[in-house]
Every structure is written in structure tokens, then in C-alpha cells.
Amino acid sequence: MPPGFISPKPGQVCKLIKSLYGLKQASRQWNLKLTQEFLSMGFKQVVSNSSLFTKDKGDDFVALLVYVDDVVIASPNLNQVNQIKSHLDDVFHIKDLGALKFFLGIEIARNTEGISVSQRKYTLELLEETGFLDCKPAKTPMATATKLSKAIGNKIDDITQYRRLVGKLLYLTITKPYVSYATQQLSQFLDCPTDVHMQAAHRVLRYTKTTPGQGLFFSASSSLQIKGFTDSDWAACPDTRRSVTGFCMFLDTTLISWKSKKQHTISRSSSEAEYRALAAAACEIQWLIYLLQDLGVQLNSPAMLYCDSKSAIAIAENPVFHERTKHIEIDCHLVREKLQRQVLKLMHVTTESQLADAFTKPLASAIFSKFISKLGLHCLYTPACRGGGGGGGVSRDVNKLNLSTSLNLHNQLC
Image (cartoon, rainbow, N blue to C red; front, side):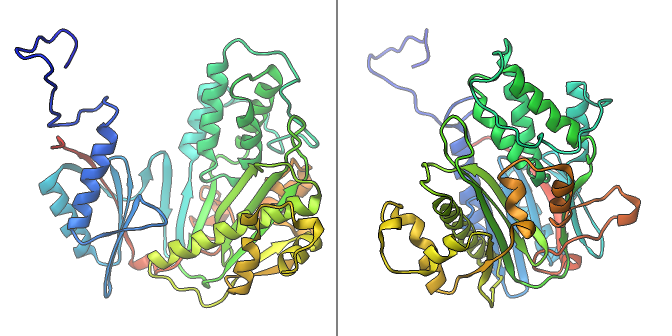
């Protein structure tokens, strides 16, 4: 019972009829009600992403992407979109925001060539909030050979400011993959940041000033071929001596997935670190295949995975158990399984052409710019782009795809 409420009978409890905002179970009840409503409308909840719902009946393909009470609807059939909006309006109190232009701080623009996604407004607001709008730009997110550690620098008094800044930088990685490694490094010191860590975070802000409008581009036409690059930096962490895994995935020439993350265990050799990075990339490729299948896209050829370590490729291709690999966890050997099933194909690439290198270590300005130029990014606000261009993209004709943000779904939950 609520504190202060006197029940006429001892031992009674309250039955929750409506979940309210602020209660711990409110978000779960809201998600449950929204999911049940979509399922009753004939949608299927995608296993690979529980926030995505699809319905495919012939040419009437519809996809719903949910974030709390905001929904993006995509379909080549405008009548289907209107019917869904009308139904949701009867069940919930909705606000139709029209064609998709701005969603959760992400700016979306499209033309006949494809869809452009950026966070220019969010970036400029961040620079203004932190006082870096008039700062001197930096050429790279991190200085070359920077090794951040818990032991360097003096502990800052206001750690909340550092945590808030790193959180906002993490959100920037949605459309700015080139700051992923720097943000991953900064995220390790949220419990005890120092002035050195804060200076490193400020450098990331100085770099973002050079490209506030740069983002991703998804072409209206591209070949359905997944290509991935994977790399690792052996024993990169000075505190734990754990390695860093980095990979980036492309659909044709469009960047669709990337990651920079410290490995869970210590690797005894650079080959083992590279092999663990291969395993992480193989899992990502398998997830992308599942996601594309849920969207009605079938891949006709194995994914190409590029690695600059011949020894790691040899470990993956050699099924013979031997002393040098017996200590590696079983789950890492899924790379061999994917190779045998022809889900992916391993290819060697030189270090100079390894695009994932920028996700594992800080690079010099010239090398960093070279890698970034190959990620298929572009700035919508550059006159040369004419609002399009750059990179390949995803399936389904974008000219026939009607996108709309929906709907701020507000209703009392029963």
C-alpha cells in the first residue's frame, strides 16, 4: 500500500490497473502493450532486433522501427502507411510528424540518389554547450601514440561533466564512426576521470568542429554484397594489457556497421588477438544476414571479410587442434564454422589498406584522413555533394519507400 494509506483490512495490497510514467514497470508495460498491438495488426517482431516489426504480403512490405513512443514507418505503399496511422490513431493518441526529416537528434534527407543521415544540429549544439564553437579545430580525434591510463593526470572535481560529455560523444558515433575509437577509450574512465582524460575529450570536440555535417549515405541502388574489415591492436590497454577489436562492415560500398571495443580476455599473441577480432566480426556478419533476411533481402554470395594477419587466417582455416590454439575459447572457433558453411570468406589485405585500423588505434593525420575517405561518408552541406552522392547503400528502391515519423504514441495503459 502507498505510505500513509490506512487499509480497513490488514494485509491488503493495491492492484495496478494503469501503469504510470515514473514507475519502474511503466516502460515494460508500455513496450508490452505496443508490441501486442503491432502483433494483432499482423506484424512480426524481428528476432534480430526486437525494436523492428515487419509485415510482408506481396508488394505491401511495411517496416516499423520503435524507440519508446516514437515510431518510424517505411513502406513502398503509401496507402498501407495511411491505414496503419489511422489504426494507431484509434488506439493511441498520436501526433503525425510527416515525412522523416528529424528523428531523435538525427537529420535525414533524401533525393533520387539515396538517403543521407547526419547529426549536424546535435554536433553544433554540443559545441556551443561546451564552449568549443569558436575553438581551433584538431586534425584527428586523438593525438598519435596516445595511451590513456587511470594512473595519469590529476583527478577532476566534477566527474558529472565528464560523464555527460562522454555520453553525448557516444551518441555522436551513430553517424560519425571515425570518433568511435576515441570515445571507446574515454568511456573506460567514467569512474575516475582526470584532467588528461578531459583534455582528450576536448580534442574530440575540436575535431568534430571540422566536419559537423558529415554523416552516412545510403544509396538507392547497390549490389547486395557484405564486405567487412577487421583488425586488432595487441595489448593496447596499459592498465589491463587487453587488446582492442575494431571492425567495419559495408553493404557494397556503404558503411552499415562498425565497432571499437576492448576484448574481454588477455591475448597471448597478436595472432590470437586478431583471431578474436575475426570471431567478433563473424558474429556481426551473421547478425547482419539475419537482419537483411527479416527485411526480405537474400544474399547470393558469401560475405567477404578482410584481415591483415595471415596467421589469424591460418588459425581460422586450419581445423587441426594444436598447442598454440588449445587455450582459446571454443566460441572463437565459430569462424571455422562460418567458413565451412560458406557464410563468409576470409581474404588477406595489407595493413596500408586495412580500413578497420582507425577503430583500433590513434593514427597520424595523413593516414587517418586516407582511411576516413574510404568509409563512404559525405557531408550533405558541402556544395559539391548536391545533397547526395558518396557511397553505396541498402536494399529496396528508396524512391518508392515512403518514410514518416510517427507519432508520439501517448495513451493510458490498461
